[in-house]
Amino acid sequence: MLIKITILLSLITIVFSAGLLYFLPSDYFIKSQKDYIDNPIRYPKLFKVIKNIRNILGYLLIVIGVIMLIFPGEGILTILVGLIVLNKIDLLLKLLSFRSVQKSLNFIRQKMGRSAFLYP
Image 1 (cartoon, rainbow, N blue to C red):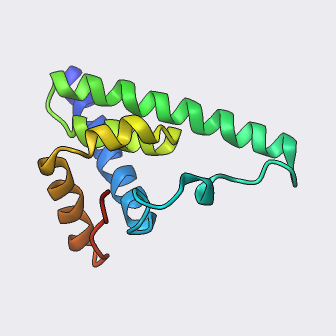
Image 2: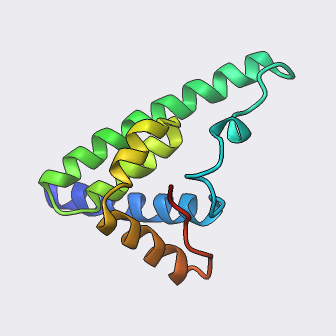
């Protein structure tokens, strides 16, 4: 049972992570994060709902990533995606300071035909 859950979580994480990494612009980590924040003034109720869904999804991805650090899976990548969804740029940049993480992200982007990320 545990093996099936691990395999399912790994597959979901790989698909979701690849999709998110595909759609992020290559200058996401160096550009001002204010450029990527939604405008809450136009639809304040919808903004709150989207923000809550994004927070739940982000924290869920971080928890799944920590679990995948113990069991087989893409733990670091899942935690990265959770931080991106939560827009926790300080923690994200600290994790991105490792050369191996940068190489892994750029390898995935290049396999999808996208340009490599630019890092600060």
